[in-house]
Image (cartoon, one colour):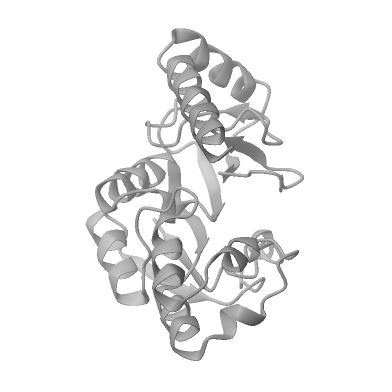
Length: 218
């Protein structure tokens, strides 16, 4: 069964990659945007948690989207067309270079003074879980915690955090500041789960493991 799951997953990803290499993917994405009025509010990597009043975007065909797009590619819209960008449990899926490219595209899309908010797992939280062993007590029915029930020791916990299911890089605050600066943003502010001085960003987080949250302004 694990072998079958791996084959199905590989096939699914191959078909998805084929779709995003076809012109139809860009045509459909632009068509969906034309039905909205700028400046847009974009929810990148929406998964199964779309936000009402935002344009919800995800690479997956099973996600609850308004349009589909591979966010490792530049978003197919003009510069300075968005006022707000939000993402949760997305940035850790990029390598550092891919993350910087993504942030540069966000910078391009945002109007002057526009803000992007990102929520993701925190490296400090993973390390603390490793040291304390609290991961053993997590409720496997809670979003984000199910995979902790499949590991049997601390080493598996750490490696799971970096590789499950498609994780590429787990940030701490210092490293997140680094990539945000390299992408051209001059201002980054740390935020708490569900809280913001900007009303549009309040109560958006849905995953309990989203412990590292920032707001960056163009």
